[in-house]
Amino acid sequence: GGVWKTEDAGHHWTPIADEYLTAGAVGAMDVADSDPNVIYVGTGSACIRGNVSVGRGVWKTNDGGDTWDFVGLPESGAVGSLVVHPEDPDLVYVAALGHPFGKNPERGVYRSKDGGATWENVLFLNDSTGAVSLAMNPKNPRIIYAGMWRAERKPWTLISGGMDGGLYKTTDGGESWRKLTGGLPEGLVGKVTVSVSGANPDRVWAMVEAEPGNGLYRSDDAGESWEFMTGEPRLTGRAFYYHHVVADPGDENTVYILNVGFYRSVDGGKSFDRIQVHHGDVHDLWINPLNPDFFVVGDDGGAEVSLNGGETLSGVYNQPTAEFYDVMVDHGRPYRLYGSQQ
Figure: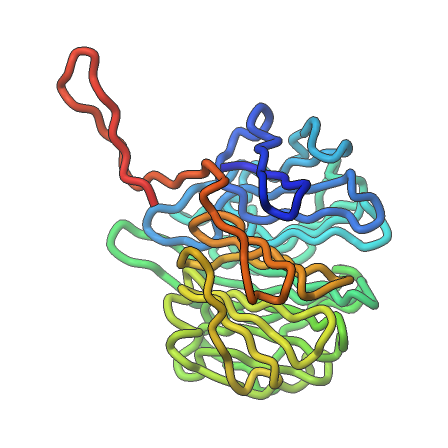
């Protein structure tokens, strides 16, 4: 687990934070555009199936990953998203979902203006509704969208949805927020994720869990009004585990949805084609803003790199990562250790 680094486009990977992080599951990470030596990492998994890893806060490196420091939010539970201001490496926003197994007040959107030394909770709804996604306007970083989600895991069920959940927006860097409607589902709303087009920041994408209306929404006026694009089951199944949407930074009509499979639309969200990857359960995607054909897909098998827009991808057997669902020992002397690995 932890943080891994490649210097050759995915041929080789090296873990760089094992000596520092006290949580194996990393839920979000961002590199400061203005200083790539500065990286923030939020721990815990916000994809809350029954076997979910709880985080222990946020870590930061100022030297490209050689050393790491704990910078707070120990009760954030699971960090679903983390965004650094493009011009100020000390200004960072964190989406804290909170503890997945019970109520706690350390939820919502947090902001630090001093590199993690102190934090403000700039968007708090209640002790059951946390933030799961953040998207910053790349041309105006004072404009930020936040997906808010009422979620709690029980041994016998998942509570997903609340009257306060939905998509929120700030235009002043987090000082004030308002809930967006204009065609989005209202009432009982579950998980919400959001992405802003780098090619046209007025185009905003949101995956919204709701019934009716579960699926992908598109706004062409910065969130004021929304059009329902698709509710295909292959794109919308198991919202608590998926519901990821990523806008292409170079083409406003290209958008990706991550689910069991990896899907791309090039016609503004009207239709989607599947891109074959080496493992199922796709949870993250980073697209090079200077060359969108170069992207990294994160799935349950590891990280897969493409340099040609998904025509080919690197493999996952070069990363000794593991997710064990169960561990047990036998009665031998000395005993043997067994694990069922994802």
